[in-house]
Length: 360
Image: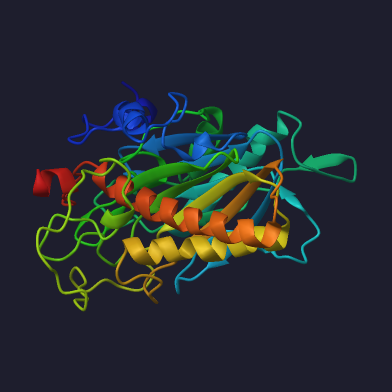
C-alpha cells in the first residue's frame, strides 16, 4: 500500500450506529421512506466527505444542484474563513456554487481550491471576463492537536481533499468520524459530523442542518448521559436518553483549559424555500439559537462558531414574514439535533473518547 493510499485508509468500524439507522429514524418519525434525516432531504442539495485518516482530518462539501442564495452568521471569536465577504447583503455575487467545511485550521483553507477546480471542469461558476469563477465560501475548524500526523511536507492534503469531497457528493453520506468531523472534539467527548432534517407540515418546505462539532463547551448535561438537545430529539436519533431527575441548569463546565483558536462548530442550514439574501441571513441568525441550545457554553472567545444558510429556491413562502419565523424555528431545532447526532454517531479516536464508549 502506498503512502497516499494509507492516508486515505478507512477508519475502524463505528461503535455507534451510523447512516444505516437513518431510515429507521425516518420510520419512527412517520416520514416517507425517502427521508433520511439528513440535510440532503432538502431538494437540490448533495453532500460529500473526504478524509485523511493518517492526519485525522477531513473536508465536507455541500453542493447545490444549481447556484444557491446564501448568507452567513458568525458568533465565535476565533474564526477561520475564505470568501465569506461574498455573502454580505450588499455583495455583487447573488449566489454561491458550494460551501465547504474543513479541518486543518488555516491549512484547511486550501480545500476551496480543489472544490473550485472540480466545479470549473464542469462549467460552473460566476461568469466574468470570458471565464467562470466558482464561488465557494468556506469555514475551518482546528484539529491540528488531535494526534494525527501533520508532517505533510510542502503540500498539505486539503486541496486534494476538497476535490475528493466534491467528487463524492451524493444524497446519502456518513456521519460521525467523517469529513470535517473526523478529527473533531466536543468538550470532553469525541466530536463529529451530524445532520438532521424536517419537513414543515404539508407545505412541502424542507429545512435541514449539517454540523461539524468541535466545541469547547459540553454537549451532554454534566453528571448524566443526556444531551442538552434532548428536548428537541425526534424518535431516538441520538439515543433517546432523557433526564431521570432534575439537573442544575446553572452548571457551566469546560473540559480542561482550552486555548483560543482550538475549537469551532461550523454548520450549514438549508431550505428549499425561496429566500432573499437578507432572509437567508435571518435564517442563519435564528439557527444559531440551536447551537446555543445544544452546546453550553457556546459562541465563546475560544470558538469560531459559524452558520451558513442556503436557499435552493423552489417553494414560495405564503406569508414571508410569518413563515420565515416558523422556518427559522425549525432551522434552530434541526441544528441542535444535528450537533447531538454528530457526537452520538462519532467513534473514539486517539485520546478522544466517543459518547457511545463512555455511556454505552
